[in-house]
Image (cartoon, rainbow, N blue to C red; front, top):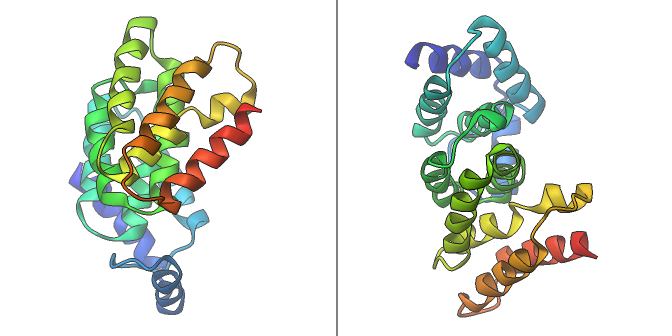
Length: 204
């Protein structure tokens, strides 16, 4: 997978803008490195990589996501998330371990929210009943985690299903998870409260 990751990296560097990089670093308040490529460029680059290297297996996709994520560069990490997003229906429950690691290191809505809403959510939807039951237990654990970003991920995971009006969403479980996430906090944290507010609005 290093070959594909290197191709994606080179394509992103071609679109680099030092001005945009500085602006994004300041806006996000992050200590990551930035190339200064736009979100649209990142998405387009991942799409082009899929055309250039078609037919990636599940293991190749997940390995590539880790290879992209490994270096602390925002655009590379965003590319890893976009890659998983485009293959969300092919992911399996054990991939939550890898995703949890990304969430713990992501620590910003621009990465964590995409992982929760656009990767974990669709992945859950695609799992069979037993697989989903196991995955939901993992998210229950996330909701009690000391790390507020992991709790945010647990809270936001069902947001897409709720917004779509899916009738089979276990709303009682979602509510319990919201309470668990809030109970695990020693102080009111806007990182969590923002996520809770979005999910409650979708449940109305």
